[in-house]
Image (cartoon, rainbow, N blue to C red; front, top):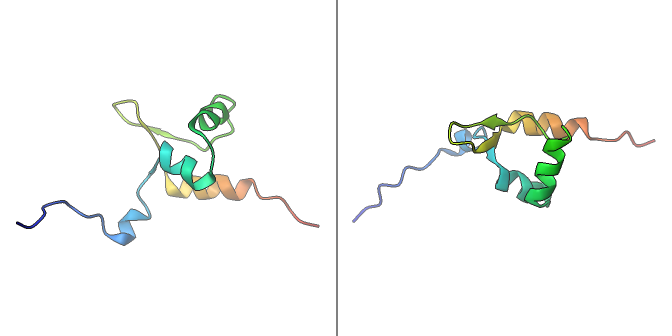
Length: 73
C-alpha cells in the first residue's frame, strides 16, 4: 500500500518557518536559552500561531543572524 504522506518540495522547505526546536538545534542552544533571549528581546521576531506555538521565518532568522556578525579587524 502506497503512503499518502504529503511531502514538502525542497524549494518550499527552505521557506518554511522554523520551529523553536529547529532554531535551537541550528544554533546548538537550549530551549531555555531561546526563551531567555526572547524575554530580553534578543531573539529574532517570532510568529505566534493560534495554538500558541512559535515559528521563526527563515528570512528573519537569516537577518537576525547576520546582525550578530562582528567585524574582524
